[in-house]
Image (cartoon, rainbow, N blue to C red; front, side):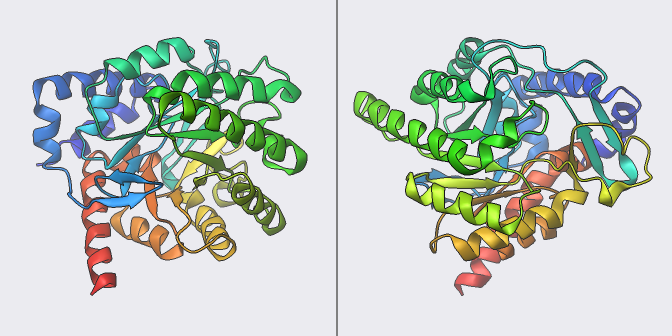
Length: 346
């Protein structure tokens, strides 16, 4: 029995951020008691090698739901093949003023302008160290809002240094619309310089630790084809191991006229589905065969997850779909992708 359809009306009656905090506490309790694993069922065993790592299955948790890495074991108990937490910044920051999360249920969507609210990288690392899960863990890094954009590389390098020993892979978030000017890092000389600095520091850390941790870059769905081409070229030039497509959108075309549609922030959920698929398809055409693309954006059903792979993704991640469909979505998507992979291989 799936209890989430009964819990959702209660959660949706609460302020979205309060509901999120209550859900995280409830998930922790359910994980510790064993109830979460029992309800979620046995994780789908569909191992795949990507970025030199063994993923238990193709469905992951997207960054943003667990910004401080404090609930890794609870999310892992849902059957995810990998878990990504963050975005974390060097120093703690409160994020943007509340209210800063809004539901658009008619569109199965969310708008958030949280603004990298987190407890800072030192607290983040302590949480990661306390987690018991030993699957693939992605650690997502960003810059503090108070750091000038021209000094952003220093924040990313500091975070990379701190999280490196604990990461399965590290994601460089340059695509959130909720930190002023952050998306400027997606283009031209700024991205070239940032990726060059990160790649150089990664080689130093790999020599120090005897382990080369993969780097991925998370990009926006609002890029045009020439911008995607430029990013793809820089990913290859600097030896970046994967790309996550995509973050939230600033477009409101798909939700025009709905309540909260004009709120500032990033729009996620069903309206981003085809936008992210467009970026995935273009990346797949531009990047070498087999280059890892993690598809995220608007996965609300198993068929949505299959469509991401058909567009060219290697793995997928879920965020807003969890809020609307609940934990059962994880296993359903993982089973669908396993079946699709078997058909393709036959």
